Amino acid sequence: MIEVRNLVKDYGTIRALDGVSFRVEKGEVVGFLGPNGAGKTTCMKIITGFISATSGEVKVASLDVVEHGVEVRKRIGYLPENAPLYPDMTPHEYLMLVGTLRGIGKDEISTRISKVAELVGITDRMGQEIGTLSKGYRQRVGLAQAMIHDPEILILDEPTSGLDPNQIVEMRDIIKEIGKQRTVILSTHNLPEVTATCNRIIIIHKGRIAADGTPDQIQSAHGGGNFYLVEIEKHDSMDLASMFSAIKGVRSVASLPSSTHIERLRIEGVENVDLRRDIFELCVQKGLTLLGLQRERLDLETIFQRITLQ
Amino acid sequence: MFRNVFAIAKREFYAYFASPVAYIAIFLYLVLLAITFFFKIPFLLPKEDFFVEKEASLRALFEWSLLLFTVFLPAISMRLLAEEKKMGTIEILLTLPVTDVEVVVGKLFGAVGFLLVALALTLAYPILLFAIGKPDIGPILGGYFGVLLVGMGYLAIGLMASSFTSSQVVAFLVAIVLCALFTFVDRIPEALGIRALEPLNAMSFSYHFRSMARGVIDTRDIVFFISIIFAALTIAHYSLSSRKWR
Image 1: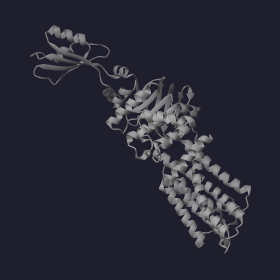
Image 2: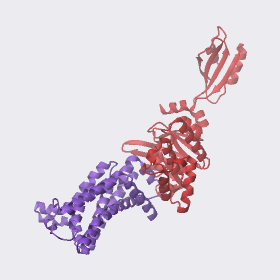
Image 3: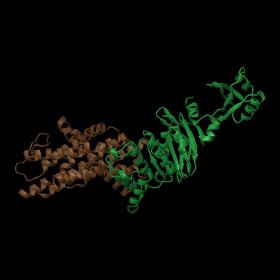
Image 4: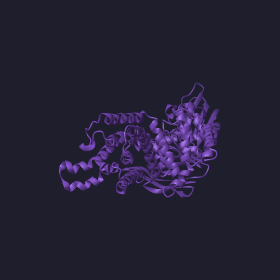
């Protein structure tokens, strides 16, 4: 559906994108993740044809975005960052304008407007000037504008930035609903958002793709080793740390705050090996009472920080 | 094509009446016109023979309109693209399936619509003339046509200035300077006493306007204004598209 190949974009002497390539298939909901200034917005602006790349190419539905700009733009609905809308218009007037410029026929446009208005939940604000709407409502009008022509592809630049927690949840639900039948690319620097709405994550850092895959794939590829939380009944005079370190595949052992009866440890093991059986058997062998054993992996937040703080 | 141009023009036209700037500009224009019309203040007017007493014509009105337009129309055109760039709304507009040409032309037509409203409000003067005397209709029709072409030229220049920047103030000032230059360029040879510069007259808005205001519609004058409008729009278009190759 969308094919990005070797995209490079220079702003003067600053390289905003440095060889970005990826493919997005029909029906995927992809989250662009990255710190501010990583190149997410630049990449979206190039896909929508607002600006051109310094080199590289983008194809949408096999059409080059530069050569077939108008054709490509017909297939895309785009919500730029901060939902820039005309403040002097009402949502109804604005959607009327965008719908007309999108080539929707006169007889059809009213039904389309009421449909998208209902979908994003702005039916009761259609007659109020956009400039007087709250940020949350403006964002929704922006989304309605992007969907007025029922596009195959939606590109949303930080659709939840500046919203309060309740609005964020509502916006996510709307995006999830929309994503059922469409290809969506959204950008964010908010991690819970991607895990909540996207089935694929592309982490962009310093103009390059630092990671690309499902949340699971990224966790196993970039999450480092596995972590095991071990709880053992207190047992005097035994050096648990060195005991567990002896297991093959253990990288480190750290003791966590313990209570009077329970000793807690956090053991880091190598990737792709499950050490739970070894830990259990060692405990049996040494006559320790194992109260808890849980494997966990690095959460996305930590992975994101590891990648982007490099 | 026409549908898109019309939709954009309509949006621009209505946008003027959503802000007080439009009403203030029209009000000032009409008040200043009324002052010259009824009190005949000849200052700034180009030629002394324009005030032949008891003449039933609108010459003074047109000449004064030309001067007022050099300030008044840049104030109208300054927001056309600069405001969109500042607010970011241009990003949605230009990622709709419309071409940059349609945007530029639509914006100009929206502003021209506003100009037509302003001119329509001055129709009270010719009506007054017909009520009290027997004016020659030729110069009045020619004058209105000329004023419209001059106004369109100013607006196109203002649109071009607006395409250069995201600051409305900068767009306004650049447009005023350019409009004033095109209006007064025919005075330069005279002022400097250099006859060799007289070909510059052909670039002057007031020079071409004056022949139309006599009621003589010459294709050369029309071609002149259309060329200026076309050139300004072409530059505005390139300036707008330059985001793609920068």
